[in-house]
Amino acid sequence: MTHRTPPASPSNHRPVKMARMSDGMDLTDATTGMEAIPSYRPDAKARRYDRQLRLWASAGQRSLEAARVLLIGCDATGCQALKNLVLPGIAHFTILSPRSVEAQDVATNFFLHPDTIGRNIAEEAVKLLKELNPAVEGSAVVKDPAQLLQSDPDFFSAYTLIIASNVEPQLEMDLAEILWKASEKVGGPDVPLICIRNSGFIGRIEVQLREHCVSDTHPEQTHTLRVDQPFPELEKAARSLDFDSMDSMEHSHIPWVVILARAVSIWREQHGGQLPNSDDDAERAAFKDMIKSWRHKADEENFDEALRSSYQGFTKSELFEDEAVVTVSENSKNLHILLHALKQYTSQAPHLPPISPTLPDMHSSTTSYVALQNLYRAQFNSDFARFKQIVAETLGRIGLPADAIPADEIESFARNSGGVQVIKGRALKESKEMRGLVAEVYTNVDEQFVDEEKPIHLGLHLALLAAERFHLVTGRWPGSPEADDLAEENRQVEEMALSLLQSVVPGAEGGPETSEAIAEVVRGGFSTLPTTAAFLGGIVAQEAIKLVTNQYMPLDNTVIIDLVKSSMEKYKF
Image 1 (cartoon, rainbow, N blue to C red):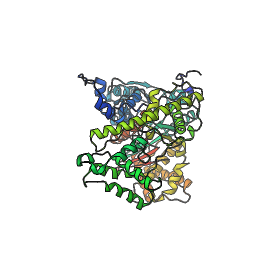
Image 2 (tube, rainbow, N blue to C red):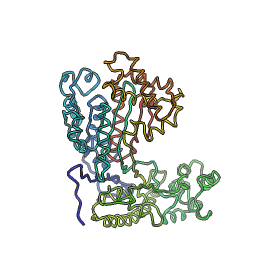
Image 3 (spheres, rainbow, N blue to C red):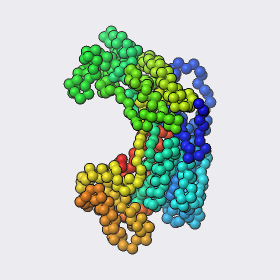
Image 4 (cartoon, one colour):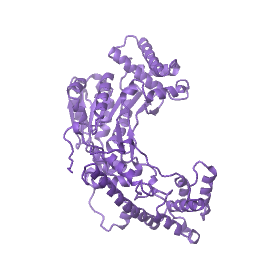
Protein backbone atom coordinates (compact mmCIF):
# COMPACT_ATOMS: atom_id res chain seq x y z
CA MET A 1 0.00 0.00 0.00
CA THR A 2 1.22 3.48 -0.81
CA HIS A 3 0.53 6.74 0.92
CA ARG A 4 -1.46 9.30 -1.03
CA THR A 5 -0.60 12.97 -1.18
CA PRO A 6 -2.74 15.95 -2.23
CA PRO A 7 -2.54 16.59 -6.00
CA ALA A 8 -0.81 19.61 -7.44
CA SER A 9 -3.25 20.20 -10.26
CA PRO A 10 -7.06 20.38 -10.58
CA SER A 11 -7.07 17.56 -13.13
CA ASN A 12 -6.11 15.08 -10.39
CA HIS A 13 -8.07 16.69 -7.61
CA ARG A 14 -8.20 14.87 -4.30
CA PRO A 15 -11.20 15.60 -2.02
CA VAL A 16 -10.31 17.95 0.77
CA LYS A 17 -10.44 17.15 4.44
CA MET A 18 -13.87 17.42 6.02
CA ALA A 19 -14.16 20.15 8.62
CA ARG A 20 -13.59 19.06 12.18
CA MET A 21 -16.61 19.79 14.33
CA SER A 22 -15.38 18.84 17.81
CA ASP A 23 -13.70 22.06 18.81
CA GLY A 24 -16.12 22.84 21.64
CA MET A 25 -15.64 21.73 25.22
CA ASP A 26 -18.40 19.70 26.83
CA LEU A 27 -19.73 20.32 30.31
CA THR A 28 -17.72 17.54 31.95
CA ASP A 29 -14.44 18.96 30.72
CA ALA A 30 -15.55 22.43 31.76
CA THR A 31 -16.49 21.39 35.29
CA THR A 32 -13.56 19.06 35.98
CA GLY A 33 -10.69 20.99 34.38
CA MET A 34 -8.03 21.94 36.93
CA GLU A 35 -5.89 24.34 34.89
CA ALA A 36 -5.92 27.96 35.94
CA ILE A 37 -7.82 30.39 33.71
CA PRO A 38 -5.30 32.28 31.55
CA SER A 39 -4.93 35.92 32.50
CA TYR A 40 -3.89 37.11 29.05
CA ARG A 41 -6.36 38.64 26.62
CA PRO A 42 -7.34 36.87 23.37
CA ASP A 43 -5.09 37.72 20.46
CA ALA A 44 -6.11 40.18 17.75
CA LYS A 45 -7.38 37.44 15.48
CA ALA A 46 -9.63 35.91 18.13
CA ARG A 47 -11.04 39.35 19.00
CA ARG A 48 -11.63 40.20 15.33
CA TYR A 49 -13.55 37.00 14.59
CA ASP A 50 -15.18 36.47 17.98
CA ARG A 51 -18.84 36.71 16.94
CA GLN A 52 -18.59 34.54 13.83
CA LEU A 53 -16.67 31.84 15.71
CA ARG A 54 -19.82 31.37 17.76
CA LEU A 55 -21.64 30.39 14.55
CA TRP A 56 -19.20 28.06 12.78
CA ALA A 57 -16.47 27.49 15.40
CA SER A 58 -12.76 27.24 14.65
CA ALA A 59 -13.36 24.41 12.16
CA GLY A 60 -15.44 26.69 9.97
CA GLN A 61 -12.97 29.54 10.37
CA ARG A 62 -10.12 27.31 9.20
CA SER A 63 -12.13 26.43 6.09
CA LEU A 64 -12.80 30.12 5.42
CA GLU A 65 -9.14 31.00 5.81
CA ALA A 66 -8.26 28.43 3.16
CA ALA A 67 -10.92 29.56 0.65
CA ARG A 68 -10.13 31.19 -2.69
CA VAL A 69 -13.08 33.04 -4.24
CA LEU A 70 -13.38 34.29 -7.81
CA LEU A 71 -15.78 37.13 -8.72
CA ILE A 72 -16.70 37.50 -12.39
CA GLY A 73 -18.54 40.73 -13.10
CA CYS A 74 -17.37 43.59 -10.93
CA ASP A 75 -20.66 45.36 -10.22
CA ALA A 76 -22.11 46.66 -6.95
CA THR A 77 -23.83 43.37 -6.09
CA GLY A 78 -20.70 41.29 -6.63
CA CYS A 79 -18.58 43.69 -4.58
CA GLN A 80 -21.10 43.64 -1.73
CA ALA A 81 -20.90 39.84 -1.72
CA LEU A 82 -17.10 39.99 -1.62
CA LYS A 83 -17.20 42.54 1.19
CA ASN A 84 -19.15 40.06 3.31
CA LEU A 85 -16.57 37.37 2.59
CA VAL A 86 -13.48 39.53 3.10
CA LEU A 87 -14.65 40.69 6.53
CA PRO A 88 -14.91 37.16 8.02
CA GLY A 89 -11.50 36.31 6.58
CA ILE A 90 -11.33 34.22 3.41
CA ALA A 91 -7.79 33.50 2.22
CA HIS A 92 -7.90 35.16 -1.18
CA PHE A 93 -10.26 36.74 -3.69
CA THR A 94 -9.81 37.51 -7.37
CA ILE A 95 -11.91 39.86 -9.50
CA LEU A 96 -11.98 39.04 -13.20
CA SER A 97 -13.08 41.88 -15.49
CA PRO A 98 -11.63 43.78 -18.46
CA ARG A 99 -14.07 46.72 -18.11
CA SER A 100 -13.23 50.30 -17.25
CA VAL A 101 -14.97 52.23 -14.50
CA GLU A 102 -17.90 54.33 -15.71
CA ALA A 103 -19.91 57.06 -13.98
CA GLN A 104 -22.82 54.66 -13.39
CA ASP A 105 -20.48 52.23 -11.59
CA VAL A 106 -19.31 54.97 -9.20
CA ALA A 107 -22.93 55.97 -8.50
CA THR A 108 -23.89 52.46 -7.32
CA ASN A 109 -20.69 50.78 -6.14
CA PHE A 110 -19.39 51.81 -2.73
CA PHE A 111 -15.96 50.34 -3.56
CA LEU A 112 -15.19 52.70 -6.43
CA HIS A 113 -13.97 56.29 -6.13
CA PRO A 114 -15.01 59.03 -8.59
CA ASP A 115 -11.35 59.56 -9.48
CA THR A 116 -11.15 56.00 -10.85
CA ILE A 117 -13.40 56.60 -13.89
CA GLY A 118 -11.62 55.26 -16.95
CA ARG A 119 -9.38 52.86 -15.04
CA ASN A 120 -9.83 49.09 -14.83
CA ILE A 121 -12.78 48.33 -12.56
CA ALA A 122 -11.33 45.11 -11.11
CA GLU A 123 -8.03 46.70 -10.06
CA GLU A 124 -9.76 49.67 -8.45
CA ALA A 125 -12.31 47.59 -6.52
CA VAL A 126 -9.60 45.27 -5.20
CA LYS A 127 -7.77 48.20 -3.62
CA LEU A 128 -10.68 49.25 -1.38
CA LEU A 129 -11.90 45.72 -0.63
CA LYS A 130 -8.46 44.75 0.66
CA GLU A 131 -8.59 47.62 3.15
CA LEU A 132 -11.46 45.87 4.96
CA ASN A 133 -9.23 43.05 6.22
CA PRO A 134 -5.42 43.16 6.00
CA ALA A 135 -5.29 39.38 6.49
CA VAL A 136 -7.04 38.75 3.15
CA GLU A 137 -5.19 38.72 -0.16
CA GLY A 138 -6.82 40.17 -3.26
CA SER A 139 -5.90 40.40 -6.92
CA ALA A 140 -7.35 41.55 -10.23
CA VAL A 141 -7.20 39.76 -13.57
CA VAL A 142 -7.72 42.13 -16.50
CA LYS A 143 -8.88 39.61 -19.08
CA ASP A 144 -12.07 38.82 -20.96
CA PRO A 145 -13.77 35.92 -19.07
CA ALA A 146 -15.24 34.50 -22.30
CA GLN A 147 -11.80 34.32 -23.94
CA LEU A 148 -10.24 32.89 -20.78
CA LEU A 149 -12.85 30.11 -20.77
CA GLN A 150 -11.61 29.11 -24.22
CA SER A 151 -7.87 29.54 -23.68
CA ASP A 152 -7.43 28.38 -20.07
CA PRO A 153 -10.50 26.63 -18.58
CA ASP A 154 -8.37 25.19 -15.75
CA PHE A 155 -8.03 28.74 -14.41
CA PHE A 156 -11.55 28.50 -13.02
CA SER A 157 -11.03 25.10 -11.37
CA ALA A 158 -8.34 26.52 -9.09
CA TYR A 159 -10.90 28.33 -6.91
CA THR A 160 -12.95 27.12 -3.99
CA LEU A 161 -16.04 28.99 -5.18
CA ILE A 162 -17.03 31.24 -8.10
CA ILE A 163 -19.53 34.12 -8.07
CA ALA A 164 -20.87 35.37 -11.41
CA SER A 165 -22.60 38.69 -10.86
CA ASN A 166 -24.85 39.94 -13.66
CA VAL A 167 -22.64 38.59 -16.43
CA GLU A 168 -23.91 38.08 -19.98
CA PRO A 169 -26.26 35.06 -20.25
CA GLN A 170 -24.04 33.24 -22.77
CA LEU A 171 -20.97 33.61 -20.53
CA GLU A 172 -22.97 32.41 -17.54
CA MET A 173 -24.10 29.29 -19.43
CA ASP A 174 -20.64 28.52 -20.83
CA LEU A 175 -19.04 28.85 -17.39
CA ALA A 176 -21.69 26.69 -15.75
CA GLU A 177 -21.31 23.98 -18.40
CA ILE A 178 -17.50 23.86 -18.10
CA LEU A 179 -17.67 23.54 -14.31
CA TRP A 180 -20.41 20.90 -14.53
CA LYS A 181 -18.42 18.78 -17.00
CA ALA A 182 -15.25 19.09 -14.91
CA SER A 183 -17.09 17.67 -11.89
CA GLU A 184 -18.16 14.56 -13.84
CA LYS A 185 -14.72 12.99 -13.48
CA VAL A 186 -14.07 10.83 -10.43
CA GLY A 187 -12.10 13.00 -8.04
CA GLY A 188 -12.52 15.99 -10.35
CA PRO A 189 -13.04 19.53 -9.01
CA ASP A 190 -16.63 20.29 -8.02
CA VAL A 191 -16.47 24.08 -7.81
CA PRO A 192 -19.78 25.64 -6.68
CA LEU A 193 -21.06 28.45 -8.88
CA ILE A 194 -23.32 31.20 -7.53
CA CYS A 195 -25.05 33.26 -10.24
CA ILE A 196 -26.64 36.62 -9.50
CA ARG A 197 -29.17 38.43 -11.69
CA ASN A 198 -30.90 41.63 -10.63
CA SER A 199 -32.93 44.38 -12.26
CA GLY A 200 -34.02 47.31 -10.13
CA PHE A 201 -35.74 45.90 -7.04
CA ILE A 202 -35.92 42.34 -8.40
CA GLY A 203 -33.21 39.73 -7.87
CA ARG A 204 -32.45 36.07 -8.35
CA ILE A 205 -29.67 33.90 -6.94
CA GLU A 206 -28.90 30.46 -8.38
CA VAL A 207 -26.45 27.86 -7.08
CA GLN A 208 -24.95 25.12 -9.25
CA LEU A 209 -23.06 22.23 -7.68
CA ARG A 210 -22.93 18.54 -8.49
CA GLU A 211 -22.55 17.25 -4.95
CA HIS A 212 -22.03 19.01 -1.66
CA CYS A 213 -21.25 17.35 1.66
CA VAL A 214 -22.52 19.15 4.74
CA SER A 215 -20.46 18.01 7.69
CA ASP A 216 -22.73 19.73 10.20
CA THR A 217 -26.26 20.93 9.48
CA HIS A 218 -26.55 22.29 13.06
CA PRO A 219 -29.85 20.48 13.73
CA GLU A 220 -31.85 21.66 16.70
CA GLN A 221 -32.05 18.09 17.91
CA THR A 222 -29.93 15.13 16.91
CA HIS A 223 -31.44 11.65 16.62
CA THR A 224 -28.28 10.16 18.13
CA LEU A 225 -29.66 10.94 21.58
CA ARG A 226 -31.40 7.67 20.84
CA VAL A 227 -34.21 7.94 23.36
CA ASP A 228 -36.34 5.69 21.15
CA GLN A 229 -33.75 2.92 21.62
CA PRO A 230 -31.83 3.79 24.79
CA PHE A 231 -28.49 2.03 25.23
CA PRO A 232 -28.33 -0.39 28.21
CA GLU A 233 -26.57 1.95 30.65
CA LEU A 234 -29.04 4.79 29.97
CA GLU A 235 -32.04 2.49 30.29
CA LYS A 236 -30.69 1.01 33.53
CA ALA A 237 -30.08 4.46 35.02
CA ALA A 238 -33.56 5.68 34.00
CA ARG A 239 -35.35 2.62 35.40
CA SER A 240 -33.38 2.68 38.67
CA LEU A 241 -34.71 6.09 39.70
CA ASP A 242 -37.46 6.16 42.30
CA PHE A 243 -39.53 9.18 41.26
CA ASP A 244 -41.95 8.87 44.18
CA SER A 245 -39.27 9.11 46.87
CA MET A 246 -37.55 12.18 45.43
CA ASP A 247 -37.96 15.60 46.98
CA SER A 248 -39.36 18.41 44.86
CA MET A 249 -35.94 19.86 43.99
CA GLU A 250 -34.47 16.56 42.83
CA HIS A 251 -37.63 15.56 40.97
CA SER A 252 -37.88 18.85 39.08
CA HIS A 253 -34.30 18.53 37.83
CA ILE A 254 -34.40 15.05 36.28
CA PRO A 255 -33.12 15.56 32.71
CA TRP A 256 -35.88 15.15 30.14
CA VAL A 257 -33.76 12.63 28.25
CA VAL A 258 -33.89 10.35 31.30
CA ILE A 259 -37.66 10.83 31.61
CA LEU A 260 -38.22 9.91 27.96
CA ALA A 261 -35.84 6.93 28.10
CA ARG A 262 -37.74 5.63 31.13
CA ALA A 263 -41.09 6.15 29.39
CA VAL A 264 -39.91 4.34 26.23
CA SER A 265 -38.54 1.43 28.27
CA ILE A 266 -41.77 0.96 30.23
CA TRP A 267 -43.94 1.36 27.12
CA ARG A 268 -41.95 -1.30 25.23
CA GLU A 269 -42.22 -3.59 28.23
CA GLN A 270 -46.00 -3.22 28.26
CA HIS A 271 -46.52 -3.37 24.47
CA GLY A 272 -44.44 -6.30 23.27
CA GLY A 273 -41.31 -4.29 22.51
CA GLN A 274 -43.12 -1.83 20.22
CA LEU A 275 -42.85 1.97 20.22
CA PRO A 276 -45.99 4.10 20.29
CA ASN A 277 -47.52 4.26 16.81
CA SER A 278 -46.78 7.74 15.47
CA ASP A 279 -49.92 7.56 13.30
CA ASP A 280 -52.19 6.59 16.20
CA ASP A 281 -53.48 9.63 18.10
CA ALA A 282 -54.66 7.46 20.99
CA GLU A 283 -51.24 5.82 21.49
CA ARG A 284 -49.41 9.13 21.29
CA ALA A 285 -51.80 10.60 23.86
CA ALA A 286 -51.39 7.56 26.14
CA PHE A 287 -47.60 7.87 25.94
CA LYS A 288 -47.79 11.53 26.97
CA ASP A 289 -50.29 10.72 29.74
CA MET A 290 -47.80 8.25 31.21
CA ILE A 291 -45.18 11.01 31.38
CA LYS A 292 -47.69 13.43 32.90
CA SER A 293 -48.57 10.87 35.60
CA TRP A 294 -45.04 11.11 36.99
CA ARG A 295 -45.25 14.85 37.63
CA HIS A 296 -45.38 16.06 41.22
CA LYS A 297 -46.20 19.67 40.34
CA ALA A 298 -47.71 21.34 37.29
CA ASP A 299 -44.83 23.82 36.89
CA GLU A 300 -41.94 21.34 36.54
CA GLU A 301 -39.99 22.57 33.52
CA ASN A 302 -38.15 19.30 32.93
CA PHE A 303 -41.46 17.51 32.36
CA ASP A 304 -42.56 20.30 30.02
CA GLU A 305 -39.37 19.65 28.02
CA ALA A 306 -40.03 15.90 28.02
CA LEU A 307 -43.56 16.42 26.70
CA ARG A 308 -42.37 18.83 24.00
CA SER A 309 -39.80 16.25 22.89
CA SER A 310 -42.07 13.23 23.32
CA TYR A 311 -42.12 12.70 19.54
CA GLN A 312 -38.55 11.41 19.86
CA GLY A 313 -39.93 8.52 21.84
CA PHE A 314 -42.00 7.23 18.93
CA THR A 315 -39.92 8.46 15.97
CA LYS A 316 -37.57 5.67 14.96
CA SER A 317 -33.95 6.65 14.43
CA GLU A 318 -33.04 6.25 10.75
CA LEU A 319 -30.05 6.96 8.51
CA PHE A 320 -29.98 8.43 5.01
CA GLU A 321 -28.36 6.39 2.27
CA ASP A 322 -26.63 7.49 -0.91
CA GLU A 323 -25.57 5.47 -3.94
CA ALA A 324 -22.05 6.88 -3.74
CA VAL A 325 -21.41 5.02 -0.46
CA VAL A 326 -22.25 1.57 -1.79
CA THR A 327 -19.00 1.19 -3.75
CA VAL A 328 -15.93 3.13 -2.62
CA SER A 329 -12.40 3.29 -4.01
CA GLU A 330 -9.14 5.07 -3.35
CA ASN A 331 -10.55 8.06 -5.28
CA SER A 332 -13.68 8.35 -3.15
CA LYS A 333 -14.26 11.40 -1.01
CA ASN A 334 -13.47 11.01 2.66
CA LEU A 335 -17.11 11.49 3.60
CA HIS A 336 -18.22 8.69 1.27
CA ILE A 337 -15.66 6.32 2.77
CA LEU A 338 -16.86 7.21 6.25
CA LEU A 339 -20.49 6.72 5.24
CA HIS A 340 -19.59 3.36 3.74
CA ALA A 341 -18.01 2.36 7.04
CA LEU A 342 -21.04 3.68 8.91
CA LYS A 343 -23.31 1.50 6.81
CA GLN A 344 -21.29 -1.53 7.88
CA TYR A 345 -21.33 -0.33 11.47
CA THR A 346 -25.12 -0.10 11.53
CA SER A 347 -25.49 -3.58 10.04
CA GLN A 348 -24.82 -4.86 13.58
CA ALA A 349 -27.15 -4.46 16.55
CA PRO A 350 -28.51 -2.04 17.65
CA HIS A 351 -28.33 -0.95 13.95
CA LEU A 352 -27.74 2.69 14.86
CA PRO A 353 -24.85 5.15 14.44
CA PRO A 354 -22.45 6.01 17.27
CA ILE A 355 -24.15 7.80 20.12
CA SER A 356 -23.61 11.54 20.44
CA PRO A 357 -21.19 12.34 23.30
CA THR A 358 -22.78 15.72 23.99
CA LEU A 359 -26.21 16.78 25.14
CA PRO A 360 -28.46 19.74 24.39
CA ASP A 361 -29.18 22.25 27.11
CA MET A 362 -31.98 21.16 29.42
CA HIS A 363 -33.53 21.95 32.77
CA SER A 364 -31.44 19.91 35.22
CA SER A 365 -29.09 20.18 38.15
CA THR A 366 -25.38 20.22 37.32
CA THR A 367 -24.87 16.90 39.09
CA SER A 368 -27.63 15.17 37.16
CA TYR A 369 -26.53 16.71 33.86
CA VAL A 370 -22.87 15.69 34.30
CA ALA A 371 -23.87 12.18 35.37
CA LEU A 372 -26.05 11.83 32.27
CA GLN A 373 -23.34 13.19 30.03
CA ASN A 374 -20.83 10.75 31.49
CA LEU A 375 -23.15 7.93 30.43
CA TYR A 376 -23.26 9.28 26.89
CA ARG A 377 -19.49 9.86 26.75
CA ALA A 378 -18.73 6.34 27.95
CA GLN A 379 -21.08 4.87 25.37
CA PHE A 380 -19.60 7.08 22.64
CA ASN A 381 -16.06 5.91 23.48
CA SER A 382 -17.20 2.31 23.12
CA ASP A 383 -19.06 3.02 19.86
CA PHE A 384 -16.21 5.05 18.44
CA ALA A 385 -13.60 2.34 19.07
CA ARG A 386 -15.68 -0.11 17.02
CA PHE A 387 -16.38 2.45 14.27
CA LYS A 388 -12.69 3.41 14.01
CA GLN A 389 -11.76 -0.24 13.53
CA ILE A 390 -14.31 -0.59 10.69
CA VAL A 391 -12.90 2.53 8.99
CA ALA A 392 -9.37 1.09 9.15
CA GLU A 393 -10.59 -2.18 7.64
CA THR A 394 -12.41 -0.29 4.87
CA LEU A 395 -9.32 1.76 4.01
CA GLY A 396 -7.20 -1.39 3.88
CA ARG A 397 -9.67 -3.11 1.59
CA ILE A 398 -9.53 -0.31 -1.00
CA GLY A 399 -5.73 -0.10 -0.88
CA LEU A 400 -5.25 2.91 1.36
CA PRO A 401 -3.24 3.15 4.60
CA ALA A 402 -5.04 3.24 7.95
CA ASP A 403 -4.09 6.92 8.42
CA ALA A 404 -5.40 8.04 4.99
CA ILE A 405 -8.24 9.79 6.81
CA PRO A 406 -6.98 11.78 9.84
CA ALA A 407 -8.03 10.46 13.24
CA ASP A 408 -9.61 13.76 14.24
CA GLU A 409 -11.74 13.72 11.08
CA ILE A 410 -13.00 10.22 11.86
CA GLU A 411 -13.87 11.25 15.40
CA SER A 412 -15.57 14.42 14.15
CA PHE A 413 -17.71 12.37 11.78
CA ALA A 414 -18.64 9.89 14.51
CA ARG A 415 -19.60 12.70 16.87
CA ASN A 416 -21.76 14.38 14.26
CA SER A 417 -23.16 11.53 12.18
CA GLY A 418 -26.68 12.74 12.92
CA GLY A 419 -25.97 16.13 11.32
CA VAL A 420 -24.36 14.98 8.06
CA GLN A 421 -26.13 15.53 4.74
CA VAL A 422 -25.21 15.08 1.08
CA ILE A 423 -26.85 17.44 -1.44
CA LYS A 424 -27.16 16.34 -5.06
CA GLY A 425 -27.30 19.41 -7.28
CA ARG A 426 -28.48 19.98 -10.84
CA ALA A 427 -26.94 21.64 -13.88
CA LEU A 428 -27.85 25.31 -14.32
CA LYS A 429 -28.55 24.58 -17.98
CA GLU A 430 -31.65 22.55 -17.06
CA SER A 431 -33.25 25.53 -15.34
CA LYS A 432 -32.39 27.91 -18.18
CA GLU A 433 -33.94 25.55 -20.75
CA MET A 434 -37.05 24.88 -18.64
CA ARG A 435 -36.20 21.19 -18.27
CA GLY A 436 -36.26 18.84 -15.32
CA LEU A 437 -37.54 20.08 -11.96
CA VAL A 438 -38.27 23.62 -13.14
CA ALA A 439 -40.79 22.22 -15.66
CA GLU A 440 -42.49 20.25 -12.87
CA VAL A 441 -42.71 23.36 -10.67
CA TYR A 442 -44.39 25.44 -13.37
CA THR A 443 -46.71 22.57 -14.28
CA ASN A 444 -47.94 22.10 -10.71
CA VAL A 445 -48.33 25.68 -9.51
CA ASP A 446 -50.47 27.43 -12.10
CA GLU A 447 -52.36 29.10 -9.26
CA GLN A 448 -49.40 31.39 -8.57
CA PHE A 449 -50.17 33.14 -11.84
CA VAL A 450 -53.79 33.90 -10.96
CA ASP A 451 -53.83 34.41 -7.20
CA GLU A 452 -53.12 38.06 -6.41
CA GLU A 453 -52.65 37.22 -2.74
CA LYS A 454 -49.52 35.20 -3.50
CA PRO A 455 -46.13 36.73 -4.38
CA ILE A 456 -45.50 36.18 -8.08
CA HIS A 457 -41.99 34.82 -7.68
CA LEU A 458 -42.40 32.26 -10.45
CA GLY A 459 -43.59 35.05 -12.72
CA LEU A 460 -40.46 37.03 -11.86
CA HIS A 461 -38.26 34.03 -12.61
CA LEU A 462 -40.01 33.61 -15.94
CA ALA A 463 -39.50 37.31 -16.67
CA LEU A 464 -35.76 37.03 -15.93
CA LEU A 465 -35.44 33.94 -18.14
CA ALA A 466 -37.23 35.75 -20.98
CA ALA A 467 -35.02 38.81 -20.53
CA GLU A 468 -31.95 36.58 -20.83
CA ARG A 469 -33.38 35.20 -24.08
CA PHE A 470 -33.87 38.81 -25.25
CA HIS A 471 -30.19 39.52 -24.49
CA LEU A 472 -29.07 36.44 -26.45
CA VAL A 473 -31.00 37.73 -29.48
CA THR A 474 -30.26 41.47 -29.29
CA GLY A 475 -27.01 41.64 -27.33
CA ARG A 476 -28.46 44.01 -24.70
CA TRP A 477 -30.92 44.00 -21.81
CA PRO A 478 -34.57 45.03 -22.22
CA GLY A 479 -35.27 48.40 -20.66
CA SER A 480 -31.65 49.52 -20.94
CA PRO A 481 -30.88 53.17 -21.84
CA GLU A 482 -30.34 52.12 -25.47
CA ALA A 483 -34.02 51.10 -25.75
CA ASP A 484 -35.96 53.15 -28.35
CA ASP A 485 -39.44 51.84 -27.51
CA LEU A 486 -39.89 50.49 -23.98
CA ALA A 487 -43.43 49.31 -24.66
CA GLU A 488 -42.30 47.32 -27.70
CA GLU A 489 -39.47 45.69 -25.75
CA ASN A 490 -41.91 44.85 -22.96
CA ARG A 491 -44.16 43.14 -25.54
CA GLN A 492 -41.25 41.16 -26.97
CA VAL A 493 -40.25 39.92 -23.53
CA GLU A 494 -43.86 38.91 -22.84
CA GLU A 495 -43.90 36.85 -26.02
CA MET A 496 -40.66 35.11 -25.05
CA ALA A 497 -41.98 34.45 -21.53
CA LEU A 498 -45.21 32.99 -22.88
CA SER A 499 -43.25 30.76 -25.26
CA LEU A 500 -41.14 29.48 -22.36
CA LEU A 501 -44.21 28.83 -20.22
CA GLN A 502 -46.10 27.03 -22.99
CA SER A 503 -43.09 24.80 -23.64
CA VAL A 504 -43.81 23.12 -20.29
CA VAL A 505 -47.52 23.96 -19.81
CA PRO A 506 -49.17 23.76 -23.27
CA GLY A 507 -51.96 26.27 -23.68
CA ALA A 508 -51.00 28.22 -20.54
CA GLU A 509 -51.54 31.96 -20.35
CA GLY A 510 -49.41 34.10 -18.11
CA GLY A 511 -52.20 36.44 -17.11
CA PRO A 512 -51.98 39.95 -15.64
CA GLU A 513 -49.72 38.86 -12.77
CA THR A 514 -47.06 37.60 -15.17
CA SER A 515 -47.36 40.81 -17.20
CA GLU A 516 -46.86 42.80 -14.00
CA ALA A 517 -43.72 40.82 -13.19
CA ILE A 518 -42.31 41.36 -16.68
CA ALA A 519 -43.09 45.07 -16.54
CA GLU A 520 -41.24 45.40 -13.22
CA VAL A 521 -38.18 43.53 -14.51
CA VAL A 522 -38.04 45.55 -17.75
CA ARG A 523 -38.64 48.80 -15.86
CA GLY A 524 -35.53 48.11 -13.82
CA GLY A 525 -33.49 48.04 -17.02
CA PHE A 526 -31.12 45.55 -15.35
CA SER A 527 -29.53 48.40 -13.47
CA THR A 528 -28.11 47.83 -10.01
CA LEU A 529 -29.53 49.81 -7.09
CA PRO A 530 -27.29 50.18 -4.01
CA THR A 531 -30.00 48.87 -1.67
CA THR A 532 -30.70 45.83 -3.83
CA ALA A 533 -26.98 45.19 -4.21
CA ALA A 534 -26.44 45.26 -0.44
CA PHE A 535 -29.36 42.90 0.22
CA LEU A 536 -28.43 40.38 -2.47
CA GLY A 537 -24.76 40.61 -1.57
CA GLY A 538 -25.57 39.60 1.99
CA ILE A 539 -27.54 36.54 0.85
CA VAL A 540 -24.82 35.48 -1.58
CA ALA A 541 -22.12 35.74 1.08
CA GLN A 542 -24.26 33.77 3.53
CA GLU A 543 -24.65 30.94 1.02
CA ALA A 544 -20.97 31.10 0.08
CA ILE A 545 -19.96 30.71 3.73
CA LYS A 546 -22.22 27.66 4.06
CA LEU A 547 -20.58 26.08 1.03
CA VAL A 548 -17.03 26.91 2.08
CA THR A 549 -17.37 25.79 5.71
CA ASN A 550 -19.52 22.72 4.90
CA GLN A 551 -21.86 23.82 7.67
CA TYR A 552 -25.58 24.60 7.65
CA MET A 553 -27.85 23.64 4.75
CA PRO A 554 -27.10 25.79 1.68
CA LEU A 555 -29.55 27.10 -0.89
CA ASP A 556 -30.68 24.30 -3.20
CA ASN A 557 -30.84 25.88 -5.67
CA THR A 558 -32.76 29.12 -6.51
CA VAL A 559 -34.17 32.06 -4.58
CA ILE A 560 -36.26 34.86 -6.11
CA ILE A 561 -36.28 38.22 -4.31
CA ASP A 562 -38.96 40.89 -4.75
CA LEU A 563 -37.98 43.99 -2.79
CA VAL A 564 -41.04 45.87 -4.09
CA LYS A 565 -43.20 43.58 -1.96
CA SER A 566 -40.45 42.69 0.53
CA SER A 567 -40.75 38.98 -0.16
CA MET A 568 -38.67 36.06 -1.37
CA GLU A 569 -39.23 32.42 -2.23
CA LYS A 570 -36.91 29.42 -2.60
CA TYR A 571 -37.23 26.79 -5.32
CA LYS A 572 -35.40 23.62 -6.31
CA PHE A 573 -35.26 23.78 -10.11
